[in-house]
Image 1 (cartoon, rainbow, N blue to C red):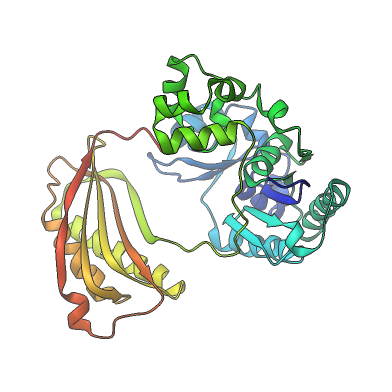
Image 2 (image 1 turned 90 degrees about the horizontal axis):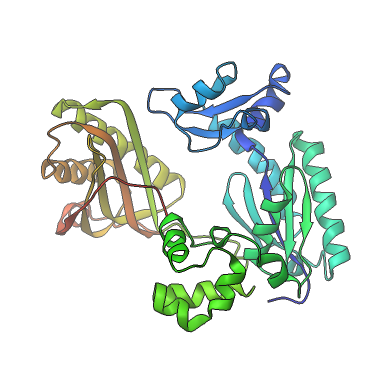
Length: 374
């Protein structure tokens, strides 16, 4: 933990929807919902005007339409969002060489490494100036959290929303965290939260009071130790400028379940090409091809094959993904398909025959209906 709040976390407010509002003045002040518009679409972002109707991200679009029938419903325009994100990231880069983007609209900045802040007063000045600069350049609002650790800076930016700044003074972490729900901490999803609730632990303060030994007993050593450290305000993770992707993948959810085997094969080939396009854009290659199939009953099956060398050849990825599909039972219909490449490397095996020679296929992994990430 640092003795000064020199880690900054920026989270743009309702980024996709706000970007659409900035680009089209007629949408300003009106409820705007961005996401998939098909029967199975989900909300990616809802403007704050739309949130007043109860609409939120990850909500089924059909439910959003019932809650806010007069809102503007838009498909995402990622080229626009990437352009605006680039402007924001450029402003962050002026503060420090250590900027860790988490997504298009979210990043950590190490102000100490940039020499831009050494104490709380300087950090607050930097944060307020950043928010003004972002609004001047993009017309958008961003919320800023400042603290002595990444975890607390992120919690601070969430508490500051919308369009605010919160600085957590080192030494006040436990007092601030104590009344918060355990779900505030990273790594505590619905399943872990329910498990802790059954043990009588619902707040971060109760988590800290339970002690490390009890949390290890309840959750296992790795998770229990980590949560106890976070509950007591400890997080020593550094801000890292580059976050290497472990995999590259694409997937599509279909408005109507696919039953035609020929259509399914064509979709897998198309996804393989998209995956390789993304892989090449990152200047990478990979050794393992992964196929993901979610069936009509929401059960999800994955299969993978590992090549002798890394590849970025679309023909190879298409061939392997198609071969994996042959071993998958799609009777009853397919709701989602995905193709990914893992085992990422920054070079490509030139020997096409080595690429195409496949090692042992990983066994199928099947799960029941998914309840979302924990």
